[in-house]
Length: 189
Image (cartoon, rainbow, N blue to C red; front, side, top):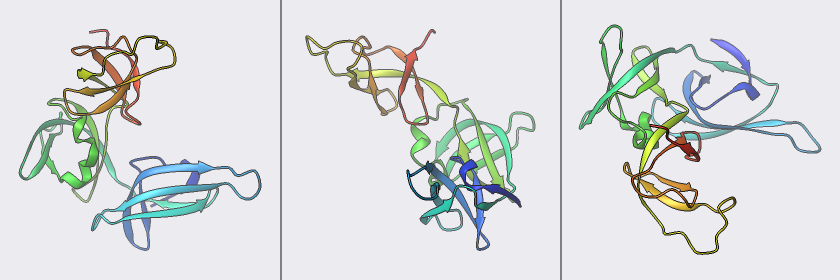
């Protein structure tokens, strides 16, 4: 176990509390004008999937679990779960749907992700920071909208909802951030 300060926790980190492992779903640091800065962390208990919320002082020490983190390529999804392959050993691992969570809309065959495993069981998945998606449909541009400030809703071919600039239409490939599904730029391919 490694002790780290609470403010350094990020999405996907694994922490140990009371002998149980938790994966960090979201971590935010709050610095109020008066009082002690705190880190608010939303986590999922790996053993049973229960979500919990914790609040620590930003300088407080937290036990970070040692996990094996390696690159894996996504193969396919079936009734058992999501199948990934380690590119060097060709060893395959099946990841349960609750570990993949809402991120399944990012997965495309051959995508390289980082899987964190603890004692041979996948406990967390880290997606690339930016992915390329294709727009399936968008709402028409309202006349008189200025291009700089207004975005319109769009749906990707994988069913993901994103906000895009007015000049983006169906069939356009764009790059989005997996952190918050925000539009980054038009794809150059």
